[in-house]
Every structure is written in C-alpha cells, then in structure tokens.
Length: 484
Figure 1 (tube, one colour):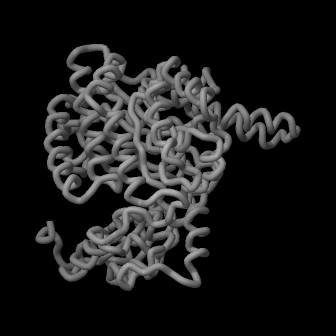
Figure 2 (tube, rainbow, N blue to C red; figure 1 turned 45 degrees about the horizontal axis):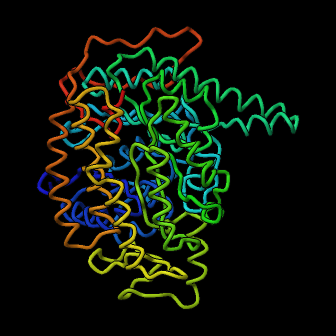
Figure 3 (cartoon, rainbow, N blue to C red; figure 1 turned 45 degrees about the vertical axis):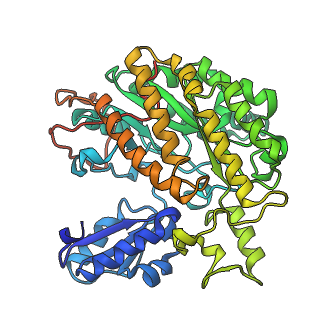
C-alpha cells in the first residue's frame, strides 16, 4: 500500500522482464514518498541504466544480492547510497536463506528454497546460463535441510525447490568425462551428483506430509536411480522443459539433446513410472512450427501422460541467444510501437503491446494465438482433467486436483498472451476465486517441535540458520501437492 511508505524507508524492487514496467511505476511512487529506491533482479542486472531512467532508482544491485544487500542498507541508512552495486555470482556456501517469517502468509501458495543456481545447458530461449552461469553453484545439503525444517516449523509443508536445474549432472556428462580421461572433471561431477543424493536422502527423513516439486531437464528421464531418489524424497513432480515435439523445433532452440516423437513420449512416461509427475512445458511460435504442430503437441502431451502442462508463446527474453539475434536484426530499421522500439517490448503499455514480437514465416500472430488457446482448452477440459485426477489417492485429493488444474489453466492461459483482453479480465476474477477455494483445501498446521538433525562436526556453517519465529502460518499447495 502506498500509504505504508514513509520518508527514509528502503524499498527494494526485484524486477524481471515481465514485471519491469509495473516495477518502475512502484519505484517512482516510492521515491515520491521519500523512500530510498533500490532495484535488483535479472532485468536490473541486464539493464541497470533503465532502472534510473524509468524507475527513478537511487541504486541498482547487479547479480546475486545475498551479501551485497547488507551494504546497500547500511549506505542508505547513512544517507549515502551507491549508484550501482555488483553482487557477482556467489558460491553455494554463501547463499542466504529467505526470511519467510516476515512474509504475509495469505500471499503465497507455497514456500520456495534454492539448492543450486546456474544451469550447464545453453538453450537459445533461456537467459539462466548467461546470467547465472553454466557452472552449478550448489549449497551444502545440511543448510538446505535446516532451511526446510524452519519452514515446516512455521507451517509450510509444500515447498518448491526453485533451482534453475535440479539435475545439474547427467549420465552423459559423466560418460564424456570418462571417455576424455578428464579426471578432474569427473571428480567434480561425481561430487556434485553425490551431494544431490545426500540432499534427497535427508529430504526423505522429513515429515511424510511434506511435498516438494522442482524443475529439471528431460535427460533425467534416462536416470532411473535419480528419479527413484526423488520419489523417496517426496519430490512429487517437476517442471520439465519439453519445448518442442519435432526434431526441427528442438534444433531451433539449441535443445536437440531432447528426444522427439515416440521416443519423447516414452521418456516422459518414464518419469511417472518412477513416481515423479511431470509439468510439461511446450513452446509455440518457433519458426519451424506449422498448423499441424499444435495438434501434434497436445496429442503428445496427452499420450505421454503428463500430469500438468503449459503451452507458452515464443518470447525473446533479454540475455538470451534469441534476443541478441533479434536485436541485431532490428538494429538498422527498428519496428516502433509509439516511440518504443519493439526490442524493448516490456516498456510498451500492455493495452497496446503486440501479442507476438517476432513475425512467423507462415502464420499470423492471431492464428498462433487462436491455435494456442485451443491447445490449452483441449488439455484442460473437464473430461481430460478428470481422467488425470485418477493419479491421486483420495476423493478429496481428486477434487483438489480438479480445482488446481483449472486454476493453473486460468492463471497462465486465461491471462496470458494466448487470450484476448476481455477474456483475460474475466479469467483473473475466476482465478482469484479458485485460489481462495484451494487455500481452504490445502492448509498445514505449524510443527514448532520439529528439530533439525545434529550434523557431523565436519559441517561448519558460515551463515546463521534462518531466524524464523514459532508463529502460526498457513500454507497452500503447489500443483503437485495432492499426488501420491
């Protein structure tokens, strides 16, 4: 609320590309009320000057904010904030746990914990490997468990392991290191993998009512041992980047390490066979897409038995290979929307912002929008959802599955680029109502008596454990919470 901001307050605003315009609006309002305004996050890291020009920033934090934030606060309190702070890329041992005890409990559907940052892949549509690096920066499993125990103590039992890639070392990585006789590399990869298994062993010892979900690459489907460890750790599901179902589409996004066709369906089915449910992520609008691609994609999602799915439009995000290529193409004769170049689409008001930013070689934006909406409608029709809900253990859970499926569809398809403005407004209202019903179905009582394990002496923590208070918090579920 604007009236809660007073002169001398410090307002930190973390922005990504999708909410940058709103973030700048909030920053201008906060500064007008006399607050120190500090921007951070991926977008501010990539475009620090934009925060000053559009958001009236006093300061911008680039990179990881865990440690540098203390200096920012100290400088603001002294009345002398710096202009740009560079937090760099911290090692996993330096990550600071979030203060979830300070957050309003009715604003979050679940808690989140990071166990690693960075991703070794190089997908053309993703900025993670460019902003967070390709070297996995992994936390000690003891610190992760301490943080999760603290969350369960205050009432969270549904937790997203919010890693860029929960499967940082593949079997292929290990094989190549052996074939190259790269002993140092093999030892490094083996150590990272061993740490993953130790984390999952400890997760398995936590209260059985806890539910975890994460995101991983398709290659994990080849690693039955890893998937079995996830199941035992109560990691009920994972967002898996399928992206495209054809070889041409996968090649277009530098993701030809994924399978396509029948092999893709089989690999997706493998996740469920090992007890890990899949939220499949598919991209439409690739240059290789044809009208038949849309039907083929939803058929694949249904055939492969993915539990949830999202169908998103190809968007060139800053920091990605796709964005750099597009920006170069637009350099000489930029397309303008008003006075804003299309390559700065996040600065265009939503009411006039194009639905697609790069032209497709064979389909119009409206055709792609309509076909994408039909895919969402087909995958999330009541009959299809009811059939998928059979994976839940009880009738109550099955009802919850139905609600969550419709909520997920409304949040992403009903308010996203694949729908029109009138439908978007109606969907927002419906989604808010559905979310309220879901909160009634998924609540957890705090467990203040729960204690962290007593770790071996060789484990020494350089950062304090989360200073969470033993107060009642209610937690709601993520999309996989009702699964067996």
